[in-house]
Image 1 (cartoon, rainbow, N blue to C red):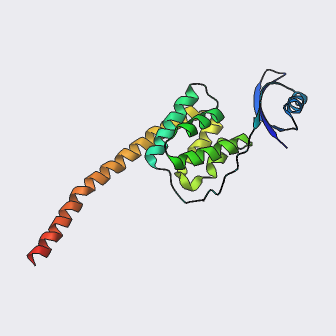
Image 2 (image 1 turned 135 degrees about the horizontal axis):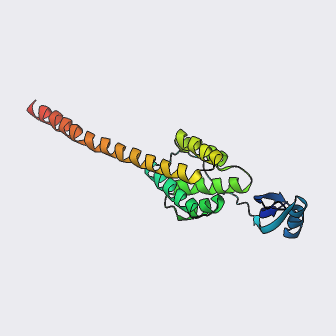
Image 3 (image 1 turned 180 degrees about the vertical axis):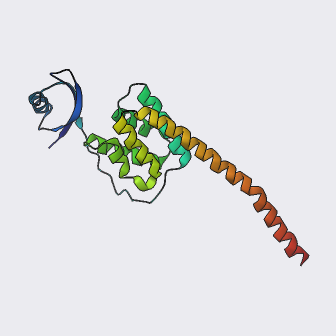
Length: 186
C-alpha cells in the first residue's frame, strides 16, 4: 500500500507532519482529516530499491563531515525542513560514500524514523560524538546550533591532524636519510 507524507494543521492551530498509508491521495487526505488535521501538502513516498549495493565498512572523512555539518546548519537556519535539507545536501555532495549514506538517511526519515535514529543505523561510518550530538540537538530543538558547533569542532580536529602529519614528515625524512647514509657508509 502506498505511503504519503503530509503537512497539516490541527484544529488547535499546531503544524504537524507525518506519514499515512492509503490507496490514493484522496483517501490519504480523508485519513488525515479524520485524525483532526487539515492537510496542507500531501506527497507520495516513492521507495527506491537499491540494486546490488555492497555494504562496505567505510568511514566518512572528518573534512567531509565538517563541511556537511556546516552546510546542514546553514540550510536549517534558512528555514528549510530537515527532510528537504538532507535531500538537498545529498544531491550536492561530491563524496559518493556520504551521498549513499544521506540517501539512505533520507529514505529512513521519510518512513518515520527520527534524524538521530536514521544516522545511528550508519554509526560505524561516523564518530560516536556526531550521533550523540544529533540526538541532543533533536531533543533540545537546537539542531542548527549543534550542527554549527559540530562543524567547527570537526574542522579544528581535521586541521590539528593535518598539522600533526606535516610535523611528523621532517623526522621521517630525516630518519630515512640517516638510514640510507649508514647503509651507504657500510
